[in-house]
Structures are given as structure tokens and as C-alpha cells.
Image (cartoon, rainbow, N blue to C red):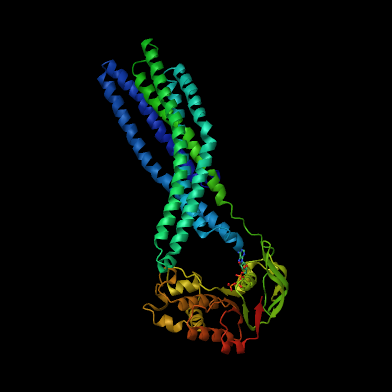
Length: 530
Ligand SMILES: Nc1ncnc2c1ncn2[C@@H]1O[C@H](COP(=O)(O)OP(=O)(O)OP(=O)(O)O)[C@@H](O)[C@H]1O
């Protein structure tokens, strides 16, 4: 948290300055109140009204700065929250494919929403509250010197005890807070997973499973939240106890000093007010600091996405040779999936990869696409070993298309360009090459038609073609189709496969369970994985 407070030190310094002004205003009001009461006791009505007027002016100043403070706090909090979110997604940009997939997407969504919410409302809000509290307590203690040193001494003594007592619970509070964030993560992940399965549950008449999953997850979350509330209640109790003891003892001491004519009658009003301010702060400060500390594990968690160390950033200057596998093996932990493969894919060649389910077809394409770099043996592309190329460089030339390509909410154009710049001509060519031009012509707003959540308004086959156009518009010359035409009808699948296979510029590796005869004839080779 410190990192972000310091990164935005200018607005935070401004907030500090405004907090000083507002709290000094409140202290002044309390001190002047003593003069008001003294004036009243002395029947000096002029002085009484003058002090009232002075307090009214100070209150106006206080209100003005309080308004600025609320706005500044909100703006700065949002700036810091956006910076944290950006840091998290930047880490995602830099991590490896397999690292990213070690957690369900729902977990990351929870980080960026739930956890950021906690950071905003617990860490940042409480930080400003504690800061304001300390400033008001310090200015109140200083003001107490006006009345009598013994009042300051007693205040300091009770303050120390009130701060120390609730600290006994600090560790437990941090622990339960961490449990709450972990359970919230599991809750979101479970509920997202269940909701994503709406269509499946619908077809099996099992929609009640969504409610059941949600209820189970919600009860677990409620359990840890109740545990957290119990600890917070104990800390709050100790703080409130210190607060009450502190206020009563100061009132008692001032009363005694008044009775001994050491301080004026008006002092009782001011010290009561000032003691209230100090002990309200002190009584809550342990709880607030513990709350801020409890968010530290959340900050740490957001930094757990490891950046992947790309061995090299060598560039491919010219693609003048294809892909050569030499003794290629791959294992997920100790599960060997590919074993000593030797093979050459010629540039411009067309290949089908077939094999039983689980034989490693997708794994092979994931290696060629730079998603899995921890292979054994050798894979050369354009004369360079894959491991000396960055995955990023590889994907500049290779398009990987899986069975269910993801489409974003938005238009066909946005889904193809993904916010990058392409000329209309480039887009039209890509539409034609992916057999999408006629489909797009028939859409109500052509290429600028909104295709709904995850491309829902397009058929499975049309979605597949949009994904293909995405790669072709970027001039990718190596196409890896992981059953990329599986959701197309026979005629469309054949058309696309033919189009790709007859394009001399493209090297095509397609995993297929349905090798059509007419296609098979045009392939350089069918590779069987076992
Ligand atoms: N991330 C992973 N972690 C552990 N094991 C995995 C992982 N991905 C795949 N596997 C395992 O590796 C083996 C090969 O999977 P792969 O997806 O490459 O097979 P496939 O031939 O493409 O299968 P299919 O035809 O069913 O799509 C399978 O047994 C699978 O369970």
C-alpha cells in the first residue's frame, strides 16, 4: 500500500494538508467554546456572541475544506486503484501462458473487483481515517496544554493503554481477513463457473444446480465473514472501553481542577470535547490499523503473478524454411504426452494431425504456438530453435485456432481488428479468405453489426470464420487449426479447408477427427500421433 501512497504522493500530500486544516478548525472550535462558556459565566454577552461568531466562521472554513477533502480523497483513491489494476494486468501480460492458467479466470476477476473493493474501502479509506484521527488527536493534545499539563499527562497515559490493549488481537484479525479474501475468491470462482454452465444445466434440466452451488459457496463465505466479525467485535469492545474510561477520567480530572480554581469552568466543556476527539480516535485506531494490515496479504497476492523469463527476443527476419521437430518430447509434470517426435513441416505444406483423444495433438500445437516452451528435444522454426525465439515473436507468424474461439462483445470489425489498425482493403481480403464476406454483407449493419455477448448472434461456424479472419488480416502464414472447422456445417467446413489448402502461401497444420477425402488428397501428409 505504501508503494501506491508514495507513487501518488502529490495528491496524498494535498489531502494531508487539508486534513490538518479541517482538524485544526475543529480543535479551535472546542477551545473557543471554553471562552464562550467562561464569557457566559461572567455574564459578558458581547464576548459570548463574538466567540459564537468566530466559531461560525471557523465552521464555514471547515465545511469548505471538508467538501474539497471528500472529492480529493475519492479521486486519489480511484487513481491508486486504477494503478493497482494496471499493475496486475501488466503482470498478466508478462506472465507465461501456463502461469496464467494456473488459476481460474474467476480468481483474477475477483482480484480486480472484490479485492480492489477491499483495498479501496478498507486500506485506503481507513488510511485516511487514521491519518485524520492522528492529526486531530495531536492538535487536541496540543490544545490541552492551554488548560493544564496534568490533563495532557493523563490523556497520554490512557491513550497508550487504549492503543496497546486491542493489539493483542492483531494477528488473529489479519488471519481471518485473509480467510475472507480467499473464501471470496473461491465464491466468485464457483459462481462464475456455475453460471458459465447455464447452457449445460439448461439442457439437462438441472438449472437448480446454480442455486445449490451458489448457496453452498455463500454459506462458506458467510461462515468466515462471521468469524471475522467476532474478532472485530472484540477489538472494537476494547477500544470503546478505553474511549469511555479516557473521556470520563479527563472530565473527572478537569472537574477537580475547576473545583480547586486551577482552571476556568469553561475548560470542562473544551477538555470534554477534546478528550472525546482524542479517545474516539485512539479507541478505534487499533482496529483501523489492524484492518489496514489485514489488507497487506491482499496486496501481496496481487503480486504473485510471476513474469515469465523469455530466454531470448531474437526476431525472425525471413521465413525461408518450415518447422522441424527433432526428438521432441513433452510431459505435464511426470505425465509423458509426446515422446521423441521427429518430423518436418515444409513451408507452404498442408498437414493433418490425427490420433486418439489424449494422444497429444493439442499439446503439439501449443508447443508450436509458443504456449508451452518447456519441451525436450528440438523444434526449429524458420531455421531457429523455438527456445531462442520469444513466444511473442512466434505468434507474430503463427495463428492458432481452437475449437471454440472466443469472440468479444462488440462488432465483427472490432472482433477482427482487436483495436489494431487495418485498412478496409486488408479487412475485406481477410473476410473473403475466411469465407465470411457474404455473411457480413447480410448482417444489418454489415461489418459494424454488434454480435452480442461472446458472439452469440453468430452461428458456431460464423464465429469460427471471424476467428480465422482475425489471423489472416494480420498476414499470418502458418495456420494451426485445432479442430478449427469442427463446428462448421459440412459445406462451410469443406469450403474453408479447401480455401486454406489451396492457398500456396499458407502452411497449414490441422488437427481433425473428420478427415474429408477430398481434403486428404491435397495434403502433403497425415501425421498419426499415438
Ligand atoms: N494442462 C495440462 N496439465 C496436465 N495434463 C494435461 C494438460 N493438458 C493436457 N493434458 C493431458 O495431456 C494429454 C494430451 O492432451 P491433448 O489435449 O494434447 O490431447 P489431444 O490429442 O489434443 O486430445 P483431444 O483429441 O481429446 O483434444 C491428455 O491426457 C491430457 O489429459
